[in-house]
Length: 358
Image 1 (cartoon, rainbow, N blue to C red):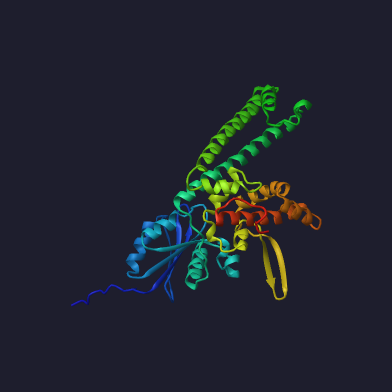
Image 2: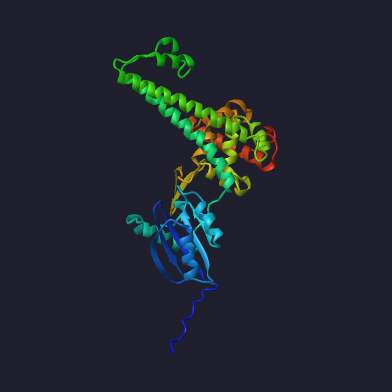
């Protein structure tokens, strides 16, 4: 009589899974507590991985990790719906051996993710709610559209320059005004093909402008929502903060309480340089790749305005500008402005220059 096959029991054991996420396939590395189970390729579907883990390691506690990227956070959400713990990490935070840097493959990436997860070397990124992510996408769409508009304008100017077409002196200082656009529309090239190129570029620019107006209206309407309205009002009391700036801040930060200190917040916004230490040597490097590019840009822009309107920041900027270049001084001002923004959001009260911390 053949003995009955007994189902293995992994109750109490921890199974660590590193996933190298791709559009067409996932490379998955599974590590048990003291051994490597296997590395394999699968279709990019959460249900396939969840079914495999529950079938192969019944009773275990499952932990997955993947790097943040184009795929967002939907994988994390679906894995948790399958009772699988999952964290999303910044690629720069994953410990990498020298050999793994020299020989980079998807299988190596999956293995090092699983290893770092098992060793407890990873820190999870903050995952916003789906609603917060969608609001953020709308606000970011405006930034992308502004870049598209700038690119289109540069293409038109490059076309004029290429054919030696000078802009009349009377409209030189009114680029992209109605008069300037009328002038561009009146230009006739030597051939129909040249006219087609210029007219197409102008039509593209006008289309982007209309799209930008539509997006801006939607963001302003979103700012009236109960989730944002009061915070927007408080933020706009600070110098250099408009409705659009406030909405960028609120949708990118989401929850100000997740930043335990000003240094933590400043690092996230890209206002803290990196540091490399070796022995007794400490080298201050440039801004790290972990910054939020949207916040850094908008804070620098707002700091230039604040440095002309806020008495304390005017004094601070003038003092800093005496001993360093202005473009470095304004970064210091942006950090001071960020401190004021943090105070406003933490205490939910308007900006008061006389009591704000420096």
